[in-house]
Length: 575
Image 1 (tube, one colour):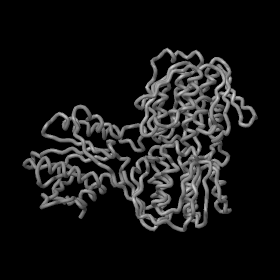
Image 2 (cartoon, helix red, strand yellow; image 1 turned 180 degrees about the horizontal axis):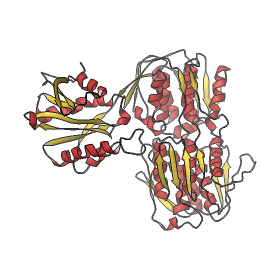
Image 3 (cartoon, helix red, strand yellow; image 1 turned 45 degrees about the vertical axis):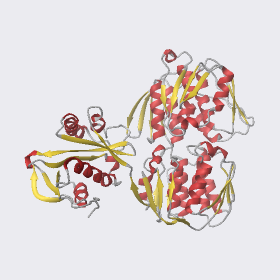
Image 4 (cartoon, one colour; image 1 turned 135 degrees about the horizontal axis):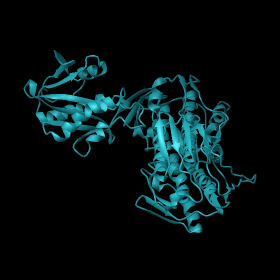
């Protein structure tokens, strides 16, 4: 999906989604625990879905209702019978947190695991673990995008570099208390992103696992063995990482955007955004992002449109190991928009301007934070900006585009749509299209039942045809059509359904021309009929926009519409 953002003034109150970083940790602790836990205020991004999926493979159970997750813990301990089971296959999607957190946990709970992922995930560094595995005699093999680990974690000393990622620390912090003896985690300086480690320790404490920390510099962590996680009921805080983009919007809108719902006493390291925001008004020129690398994209937008300069984002080497090389991708996107930005080995130097030119198409690099950065910057450009691959925001903030629109952002969606035949092998994909528990507005069972017969008929009856509608390769709807024998075998568009999550986003309007072209290819350039409930004003407007006109007749309770046969070359433009 491509998104075009037209410059506009943003205003209004916005509450960032629940913290993805904290949700990962609370879900893991609950999954390891004895008993049933309830976690409220969970936002279901692709990364969180990956963690839940993998924890289910490890042995936990999950029930989801709205934003509440009930977790049946696996009761992990030093003598867990789960270790006698086959190695789990853990699909981590594109979530670096899921992969790095669960490698030691899989070793502790199941004696190993087989890990896969998508995008750049399996290319991201895992050397700190591999060095430890070499030392501890744990087997690992990474081949063709698949990582296999096998062996038993043993109590002892674990030395980790503190300047790569705190995610390696978190994985060991969760796993080592489950062993049958004490251990020590010793960071080799410098220790970065300590806030994320504090978030991990807080989550462990909420589920009954205490972990002594020395006061040395850097601090050392001493997990005591033979501990068990205990069930707890907890709530997820608002996400400071995502809130950073709305702070950037607040800065660019001269305080007309109000960011709400964040805990200023949070253990999240990115809570420093509030301090950095104030420092932008106090002419601070250098910002250390070693402990908050996810804030670099929104800070870069603020610096690019600061109206003064230069601004330096320092100690940013770890940005090269994210979903994209963010030092390069930030530079590429903001430069294309007209910013004056220089990339260093571990820094960005940005000369501020009052406004950026825009008027270009920029790549999101399949990186959710780069897409959101480009969107916020585009609101202050002279000309519209198109962001390719904009669906990547679903990785962490699925409703980001809707929130931007609600604040006054002007966006236009363009989907990469295609059709696929429906047959015996995939008709259920369409019938159950909107019953996924993670969807925002799942349709009810009556909808599924009423359409299942149509889909079965299309799958097996050659007189009827059904096409699955795909957006960026993902099923989002279907069209069902055939010859209306009662009217002399004229083509009838019998069902045209789009996933309710996509309503109001223009997807249905962009998919209909594909459906019409498919019908013309099958039946020739003939008139096409459809029936529609007159009260379904959204559908009526859509069909009328593509040349369907009421015949004045009714089929049962539905009005009959007809689209005349095309004359010459028709591109289905709305009238």
